[in-house]
Length: 74
Image (tube, rainbow, N blue to C red; front, side, top):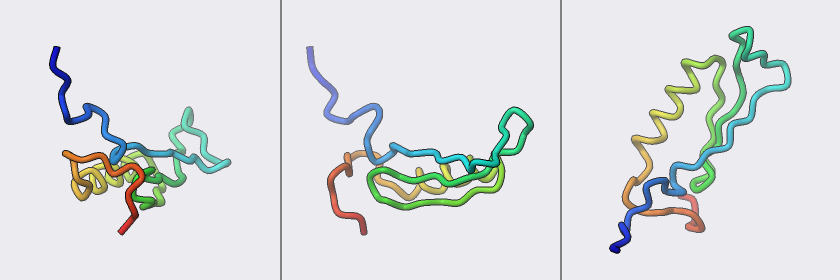
């Protein structure tokens, strides 16, 4: 059995989603902050569409082949 050297879920794409205390996702009111665990970058979003844009923006700017966990943030 050969292990793939590239992680299928790299730490460079691990996030913490912090919903604001007044968010009510069940009512369509979702806002808060998204933080990349490896780089420390954070994004404030005001609705679900902005949350997805933040994820897409960060995913296109983060390296995909390497695991950044534990590396210094730029």
